[in-house]
Amino acid sequence: MLTLFTPTYNRAALLPTLFESLKKQSNKKFEWLIVDDGSTDNTREVIRSFIEISDFKIIYLYQENQGKHIAINTAINYCSTQYFGTVDSDDYLKDDAIEIIYEKLEKIWHEKNIIGIASPLEMVDSKKNILARPNIFAEVTATPIEIGYTYKIYGEFTLVYKTEIIKKYQYPHFPGEKFIQESFITNRFDKEYKLLHIPESVVIGEYRDDGLTAQRKQLLINNPKGAALVFCEKMNNPNIPFPARKKFVKNYWDFESINNPSFISKLHKIKNLRLKFFIIYYFSSKKINILLKK
Image (cartoon, rainbow, N blue to C red):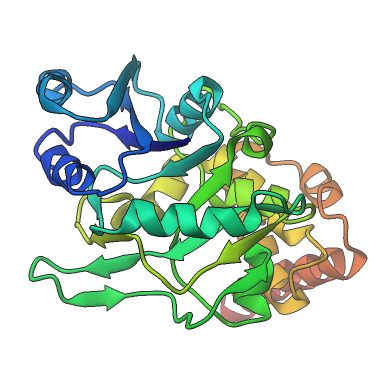
């Protein structure tokens, strides 16, 4: 059995599109779990109206506004089905999505080193023109890091996990912060598990100016502890090529510095000696250039 999870916050106007796409599925062997992250609009009433007419199970959970990552924790901890996938409130499923998902899950259920499947997310504009889609044409079993750095396939994926395994990975909570990059989880399980990346898209996402993708830079600035942690773990991941880790260490240093002024403390968190020398040289050069310009 499959749980499709949707985190939502003040998206009552968008949820009907997703609901209609779920109604169109020929395979109704799924339940829809919605975690309302403190909405102040009529989300609760809209979902109640769905429940009254739905021919599949809908579960509604409400929590105080804490951010999408905590909503994901809530959903994973609640989930009791074998598989768990996320569909955002501004996305919707293709008509044959559930059929494709089950077809692909059949290939991996017995593979202990595969945590789930990854389907390329099609991002479209308001006229349904495709704006972006990971360039994948055949099935590839790889870690999230390998898919980008080895296979050079970039973009967003819809992920469906084996629930028993993904329950081991939880997002941290920093008081006062409401965002952390979802790559925090994929970077952590990258050391143990792979994903079956498939060429078929099962979900379509519509780009919106008020979406998390559009707001990502400001979200990182507003949530520096979470940002610093993600970049810290990426810079210390030996599976990531060194040139990319040099970029991550600079990002780590910038966000860590917001709450941690100690040079020694920040340097101590960098495990790779080459990266330590790189960051020392990088900031020394910047200071020298500033002094020369005076």
